Length: 90
Image 1 (cartoon, rainbow, N blue to C red):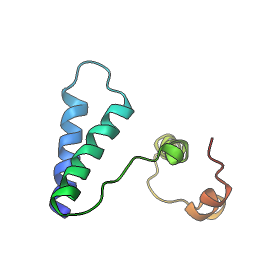
Image 2 (image 1 turned 30 degrees about the horizontal axis):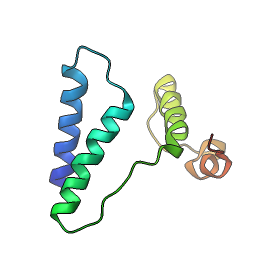
Image 3 (image 1 turned 135 degrees about the vertical axis):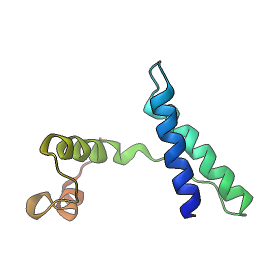
Image 4 (image 1 turned 120 degrees about the vertical axis):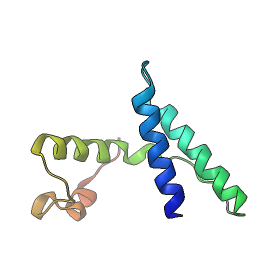
């Protein structure tokens, strides 16, 4: 499983870097869903589907970490637990 995750990360970085045209996040998500589901099918596991409900939650935190030059789950009021409790999907 570690090997497939590494391969997926390398493939994703190549797709993002090598493309000159705009690639939507949806197309990348679908591409990886297909890769993961092919692996799961080959191992007699049921397929997975993408749930975009948490997209705004993860995007907001990613932008915050970038602006603050920080990488982590947060502390205090900004801890993951507090952010998850207060999250209202749109």
